[in-house]
Image (tube, rainbow, N blue to C red):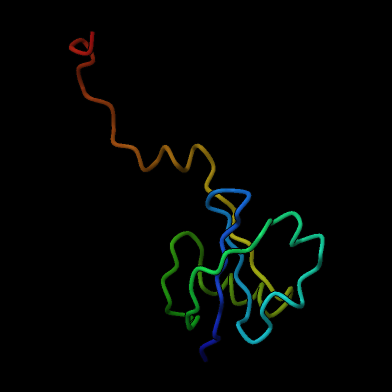
Length: 97
């Protein structure tokens, strides 16, 4: 069964996202969480299903968090994860100087 979800990005931290059930919005979130997250900027509303592909997390993990905590926070990738997206270095580095 699909769950309608709203996604927000943080104005404080790049690549920090908050997912909440659309019907609840941000009203049920604690003030502490919202202060830490910063001013939420709405990104998209979407139907969350088990088969839905999300960028960095499993849809089932998001759904469980929404059902238990009322929100899911997607943390920014670590520097090591970001490096995984980089192309490999050239085989011969002797031509760079």
